Length: 109
Image (cartoon, rainbow, N blue to C red):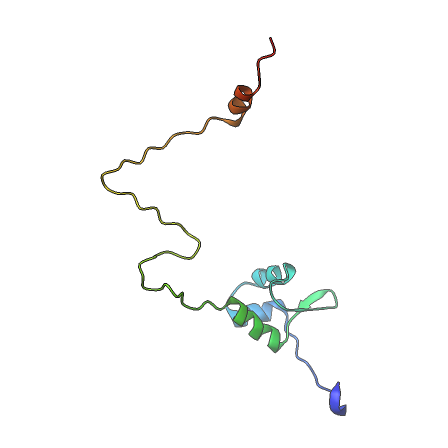
């Protein structure tokens, strides 16, 4: 440590972090396991400092979109399909893969 003064860090267990963030302990451990959030690996288990908890909150923060209020609707990543009233939506089943493969093979007769 610098300056001769020993600085004592406080480490929090995943259950304590989950309680502070209002989520499950499983979620905290899973995010750490997938390396999506910062953590320390001490004594074979996940430990978090105050800075880690603040960083997790920043990582998970969602700000309003630039397109908010423009009628895009729904969460990001979803598609809206607009079907006009005059057109009818016709669904057609796909040919099964086995039948497609059979049709693509030349007959060996």
